[in-house]
Image (cartoon, rainbow, N blue to C red; front, side, top):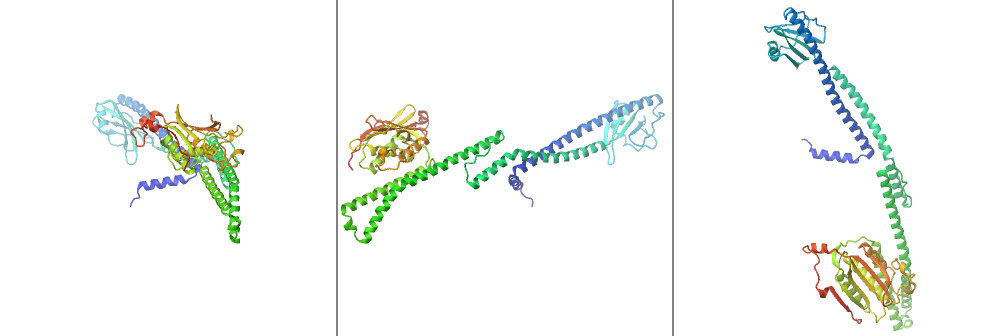
Length: 498
């Protein structure tokens, strides 16, 4: 039973792919040279055969003209035929009656062909024939002479072609072996930078030392490859440095609430073991302590959530979609109101369509509102404005608080950075850093300025979805449609009571 050709082809492909690049280059070089030698042999053999045959035909014509001239002078029956030399040329005379004359001792030629007989009868002037028998091949030239014809023949000799072929075979084998060796040497020389690159990558993988750059050598593709790997190592160094800083900052920020939480819990445990909990802690003090514990747990939960969100970076399973940013802002304001009932938010939003991740944008807007709510006085709402400005969606969140000092403005969006005036307030210093990351991921820009009311004005500019795209997608599932005027512009303030 024959094996399927497709299976053999796949097996050969797998075998070839498992070979090293050096081996493949060597094999390819040897095959290329072998094919070149074979093609050169075929072409040279054909050219040599044509040349030898042309030379033999020219010699037969010259000998036939000499014999024909002698036959016309002396007559076909009386002309003296040259003796057979033992090899090479053979002659024959065709008489008018169809009989033939040959020199004594000469081997017999093939019978006179019908075409050669027509030449002897005067139907044509000459004829060049080639014929192969089981033993010998003949090249026979027939020339009209008198009332008959003369023939000069030569045994076809393939020995020059055979000797040439043997020589080409030996040369071809030598060329293939030399080509394989040269290909091996070229592959070794050409792949030397890749070998060093591989060794450096293995060393980095084993030592985990990302500070060792790979020497930039070679040119062209090799140099670009080394530069790309060095850039990748630099990115990994920056990523590891950022992770280390994040871990150090997180440990520092977690230390204080964890220490306070542990001390308060240990105090409660000691008092409970002694049985003096009620006497040592009056109801008012116990309530205050429990409230502090709840606030510390909430702060830890918020910090853990923000650390998780920040550590994930730009990795998210949430897909990008066209959305109305006004809906996101309203949802974030509602969530802020539910988390902190005392916060008062004044919305002035216009429907603006953007392309983004809804949950990430809502988290960023929520952090902006939470940050403003910490500073805004109880009788002053947090003002949230959304409008379209050129090709951007502009979101502004301002408060009536003390504002941000000029010295703190450059670091407002840094991780864990908190101004001296904000140390006593709840928070981790990660909220605005998350805002910055989300805005950057959406191709936008976040800035800080002073509000006309004296507080801080945080502004976010995001690319708005092109109008042409919205129009083209009007018939597509999920495509935006213009909102009614009442929905596009909502303005109001939520009551401050629960």
